[in-house]
Amino acid sequence: MTKKELVGSIKAKQSYLCVGLDTDVDKLPKGFPKTAQGVIDFNKVIIDVTAEYCVSYKINTAFYESLGVKGWQAMEETLAHIPSTHFTIADAKRGDIGNTSAQYAKTFFEVLPFDAITVAPYMGKDSIDPFLAYTNKCTIVLGLTSNLGSRNFEQQKLASGQFLYESVLEQVASWGTADQIMFVVGATKAKEFESIRKIIPSHFILVPGVGAQGGSLEEVTKYGKNKEIGLLVNASRAIIFASSENDFAEKAALVAQQYAQEMKSLLM
Image (cartoon, rainbow, N blue to C red; front, top):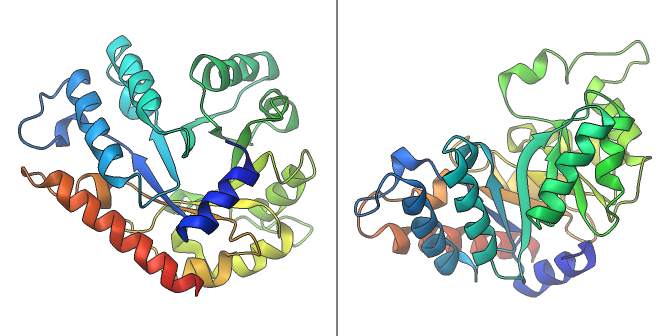
């Protein structure tokens, strides 16, 4: 799915919800074995009941890699079950020297045909270029994250007066087009979105941290949307683990619907 197709989907649904499949095997509801197969079966139900309310799914690869070979198979089967009408993200946060990044790009753009992957920019342009070589895919670069540790580096002031994360946004945006580069900005940093939009007015922003982490959807939308809406707001645990009982599917659908309804109202 291209950025243009994603924008069309968002405008048609009036939803910019991304459902995070951070499927912790230990939190699977009753009736599911705590195995890779249990993850597959659970994910398929979640996808089926939430697809009408969201435009994207984000698979956090750590929850699958920790299960070994069977976990990778679970990731493949989960990805294959996501409708082609939805934007797929590998939340892998890769980033290494160029030839290693090229293998990561091949893994998540070819072997596992995701539409996008999250990457870490710490090692600079040559570590990002192999992902950008796939012009029909999106590379989602970490910008300003919501964890406490973001103060250690991301929010450090440079001699130029910029914060480090602002320099990252500015430089990375010049390495490709807004059709192939997105950025991660945490929902708990909602008020920073206004200044961030001055740096990257046309780029999509993937926004984790709404829901379980306490970010405000209203504030993120107010300060972060652009003329194309330009937001993918991710909710993971709040949706997929809305219930641990037999009604888990109904509760997941209900929470996803509530997010979608709130998004629609914020766009009016």
